[in-house]
Image (tube, rainbow, N blue to C red; front, side, top):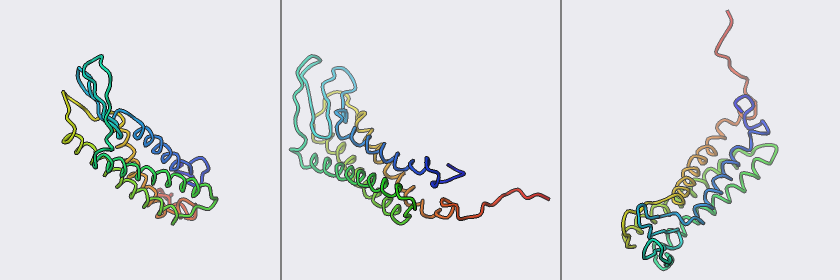
Length: 189
């Protein structure tokens, strides 16, 4: 990849592939039931972005309460969902941008800007959720924000990092397309 840049056919799909991985992580975060879990015995609390479930004891039945009844629950779900939808749009645009033989670098910079907007929405949802959940929902024992919540943060971090890559890529347009004569640091006597 270093020698050929994004003009090399196998390497030009790395950024859309990373966006696709971010989409998969976002799906896991949206569908996962492990946003909050009990850390110690008895395991009596489990929550997702959409609902909070409890049980009376170790072998009891789970009773679930929708978080959509709370304004903060709707806000957290809506902002994270908007960020995810923007990520899916960026993924589709990146596939279109990199499928064209001649890369459109201004188009790529727009994808980077849209990724930053997606990251802002995702981070807002990821911050609203734990702050309001821990203050408004009664929790027993020691609880932790778990694996699905971690996938949500991984998606947000990927949006930020890929936003930088997509925004900075047009600065190296000539090097990527091979229009610059290589400079050698070693000169013979």
